[in-house]
Image (cartoon, rainbow over all chains, first blue to last red):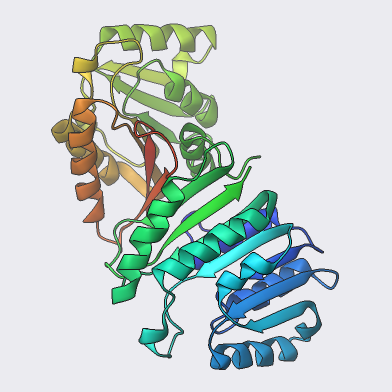
Length: 186
Length: 186
């Protein structure tokens, strides 16, 4: 197992180490359903995954993938903004964000700084102690730079008594390479 | 085992995962000998540790600690600058840097940007494939900020085909908190 995995694998390792089968897990950015499927496998038959996206295309694609894998029954796919996470009751073991826009989709429909930070704030209140939030951040598109600044500024001021905030970044990459924030609720 | 260990433990985990007993390991900044002792334990009776420091006080303290632990025979303590690493022949499995000044010592005798970068460059050429260099960076003293800029700039331009460069940093800390660079030779 490589000591320097790509960032998508990095966040999965943190989630795997923390979440236990049967727990409630959240995919804040459904996209093509990669993380939704990962979380559904992880929580198993007795668990629950709640996944958000504002694009019907994303929800439909994810629904198909989960149906093919026979895991649709443990997943709630919500066609709404991830800020609606604020309506949920905890505890949840994990919240995954993969920011930016839908691969192959419309760049103008990327996640946006203000709502992303709201959703992060909502997600953190749901986490159980030891629970993990992971955020993959892309700065290769215009809204991404603004979003990165807002998300980092928000995370930097989180109370160390309540959260660990790790920034994990490969330095010698091209400028567009994503990096990762991992937040552990203490 | 915590998923968010302090940075001194973070670098040890990378070194432990990579170095095998019997290999040659380098402590580029002896200081109080903490890392020298760690490396001596790791490489075992058949291995070798080479440790550098420009301060006689550091070398003497480290010598005492290793003698108490019965591990002095596998260690070479060198009272000279870590840029002298350039004189060694590889391969080595690990090189550890813990930048800044000797705890309890003279802040004016801290490591300096130019020689630190030279030593990093020398150390990287010694690493075997899969070998690890770890660098703990402190910005709480004046020379530390300059050194941080120089070290990051050097590491950012390393060829991705030859090295992975990871920056691992806790964001919601006080300003003086150290962070870590981990470089893996591919």
